[in-house]
Image 1 (cartoon, rainbow, N blue to C red):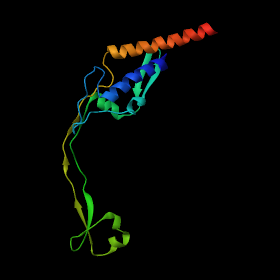
Image 2 (image 1 turned 90 degrees about the vertical axis):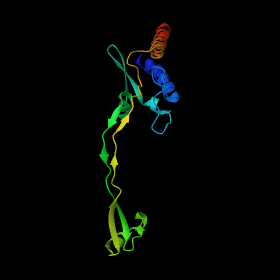
Image 3 (image 1 turned 30 degrees about the vertical axis):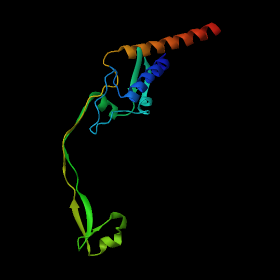
Image 4 (image 1 turned 90 degrees about the horizontal axis):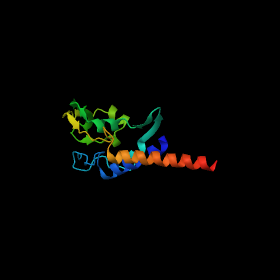
Length: 159
């Protein structure tokens, strides 16, 4: 029964991730660049259904999906400095052309550049599964149970 319910719920998840909507039917908040969030064909395949004593538990294997579901605040931080190499005349030497021999020569100078602050960022809450069973999720679960019991009944009558 758990596998049949899992298949039906995965269909609901595929629909959510293809349209960019949550379990309540509302669209997820768009990304910072204005594009629809979490549009994917692969993400619904990440969720697994496991049979437990009194039902089925669904879980995702990607750890950052929980951050999307619940929302997350990334703290402010500082970007690390990067090394740039220059000749004495101030001309930059690209790393692809930089060799150990060039580093040993006296005309090479290293400068640390690019350190800057990155502001705090908020990943908005984009619910993936409902807090309470909605009509869409409930009908998917019922279809899975009905399909599984029909298969069990068909096998029982054949034997």
